[in-house]
Each structure stands twice: as C-alpha cells, then as structure tokens.
Length: 318
Image 1 (cartoon, rainbow, N blue to C red):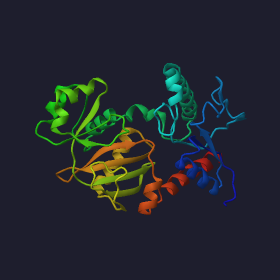
Image 2 (cartoon, helix red, strand yellow):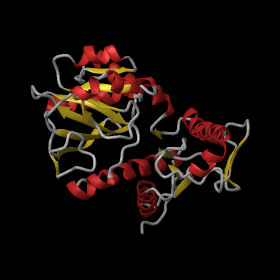
Image 3 (cartoon, helix red, strand yellow):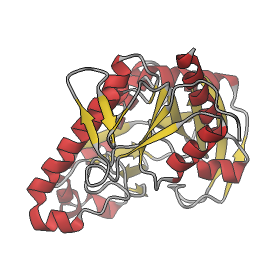
Image 4 (cartoon, helix red, strand yellow):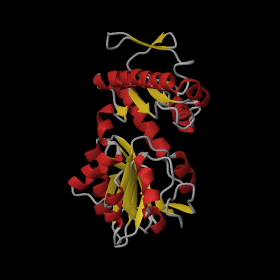
C-alpha cells in the first residue's frame, strides 16, 4: 500500500454497497488518499449528517468533515424507485409521508454537495450542471451547438406521435430511463395504445440501426472510447462484444465539445450510428458505470478517475 502523504480526503457520495463506490474507495486508499463515504442509501436511517449555517460546519456520524480535496458524486438514492432502494412497505403504509421524507433527504444531501461546490471543491459532477442533464435539455443544447443528435420528440400528445412517425422508423423509450428501447410499430399508433400517454410522456426518436459507441471524458480529456457490438436495438444487457478503439478526430472533437455544452467534468456518453453512417449523441451520463467496460474491454477508466481524484486531494493540501 502507498504510504499516505499529506492530502485532503476525497468524499464519495453514494452507497457503500455500490461496486463503483467501493472500488474507487479501495483504489484511493491504495494511492494513500483517505476516502470518506457518505452512504446515501443508509441515510437517514443509519448515516448521521449535520449542517449548520456556517458554510464549513458539517459533521458525518458525529465527526467533523474537513473540506475535501474532491467529491465523487455517484448518487443520492433520492426516490423510492431508485435502484437499490427498498421502500415498498413504507410506500404502501403511507406513500405521501414517504415521498416527503425522500424529498427532505435529497435536499439535505444536495445542500452538502452544494456547499463543497461553493467552496471551489472539484465535484464530479457539479450541481451547476444539473439543469442541463435531463435529455430534453441536453439534446436540445447539443443540437443548438451544431452537434449531431437524432430527431427526437418528447410528448404526451397522440397526434404529435403520429405526425413524427409518418414515413420513418421510430424508437421509443422513457424520458428518464429505466426501461429498454423498443421500435414503434403500427399497433403502438392505435387510439387505445397512445391513450397511455395520459399517464406519462414518452421519448420518440428516429431509429438508428448502426453501431453503438461509448466514450468517457474526464476533465476535458477522452480516457476511453469503446465500440459495443450487439444485435439488439438496446445494447444494455445484450452486449456481444466490447472493443476499445480510437475515435476519428472529428468525433473526438465533438465529444469534448458536447461535454463542455452540458457542463460535465466527467461523463460516459452514448453515441449511435444512423443509417447514413453519422454518429449521433444519445446521452451524456453524469454518473456513468464503468467497471463492466474496464473488465470486458481492458480499459482503465477506474484508474483514470482515481488518479484524478487523488491529484485533487494532494493539490488541495499543498
């Protein structure tokens, strides 16, 4: 193990049970940097957090938190349907109080991270980018910046869907995520089927039949680019092969520009090739998973992230 030199700690905001959090923590300790986990899955039942009106007065489990050298924000576990959260019994007993409790929890956690951001601590990723990350915002911003995105419609209006689908193949998926992408068929354009839009809006997007590409950008540098081979429309859980490859220079420039437009220090972005061969941006993820890609493609995304966090911790202490 590396001898710990003078550094500030790195704060990891997420669940200890999340492999990404635990691996980042383990590797930071190997680098000689203290990793402090704010376990957002265990908060507020187990994790104890206190803030006062003094910007730097913060305590975690009874111990004062000093200003960290960097913050890795994995997730707040901010909703009953968040992966890993088990709130079914509480929701069935009193759904309103449960939702209020999740709101209060998330507000305090965002307040914690926001304080560090206000002090100039590097946040991966900053709260200042939050308003840009929803896909209806980020894709519009990317298009406005002249970057290639697929034709997309977010709507709960049946006739808008029919107009959009006329003469083209269309994929549909949730606005936020959580379900697989499917191709829109004639049966989906019936009054009965489109009536489901009264419950929730849906994303409709030109169907792109080409290859999937995942690109990781960290502090303005591309640290990995991967080609994902899959015969499925949605590659998730259907990856047949993942290969590291070098992006064409123009696409690399577009990826760096996209990261700037959305305001992210760290992202895993998904691109897909359309029928004409153009790679178009589907999403820039503000808290991407990466361990599976490292394992299958031989990349070292984890190492890049940890070394960046460690450098910030050392720099803040000097």
